[in-house]
Amino acid sequence: MELITGVWQSLKAVRERAPLVHNITNYVVMNNTANALLAVGASPAMVHAREEVAEFTAISQALVVNIGTLSPDWVDGMRLAVHAARQRQVPWVLDPVGAGATRYRTATATELARHAPAVIRGNASEVLAVAGEAGATKGVDSTHSSEASLDAARQLASRLGTVVAVTGKTDYVTDGERMVAVDNGHALMARVTGMGCTASALVGAFLAVESDAVLAAARALAVLGLAGELAAEQSKGPGSLQMHLLDALHTLDEATVRARVRMR
Image (tube, rainbow, N blue to C red; front, side):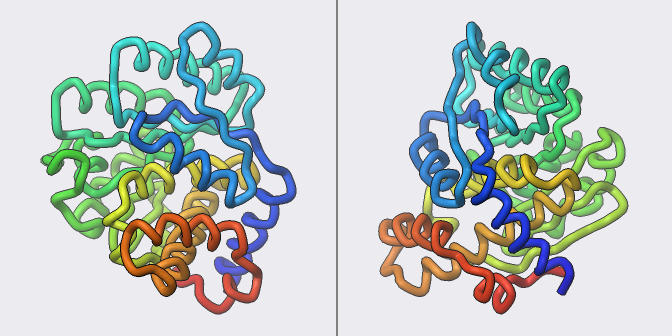
């Protein structure tokens, strides 16, 4: 029950403080990510230019680095933003989208992972790839269950001194010692592009109001999963799910959180 109470407390804090979340993310999901952050109560920004990323990170409450659509200029911007985040003690999230699919993508993810992200959020195959194990992906989709990467997630978290969140049918969050499982979510969410990217963005928002990265990540994933369940109850398919998901994030209340969040 204490875990569930904390979900509402963090969601309420996001709504009250409206933290500025700086996203260096991919072309595919910018609109989805920004709208989800707005719906949950945060303030999103999508800033990528090398000339301003460091300055913008310095005024943000969290940074989210998503490698979905890589280019050399964007990778340079990511490095500058991460350096600024570490200097200013701004918590940051790494989303290693598609790690394991190509050498460039995997190398970029593993390089950034060494620069003290508060949370690495990925699917099982991405986490396995960043951990240096056999993490082949099907494009950006996982070919492994979240359970299959738990040992690698624990080891990666311990080695890097970070928190690793593995998302799938059940989401798992670990710092190498503690482990929280989140059972909320709906299968239809996997039919909407960028849902994992949205998860990473929400983790950033919750990190801005919660200093314990394990709890921040688990609570953010619970909120998104529950919103997905509520949206699926009203949706005929993935198109309407996107609309109802934003509404659910915006209207989620304490009673629903207490009754329906499933964490252990």
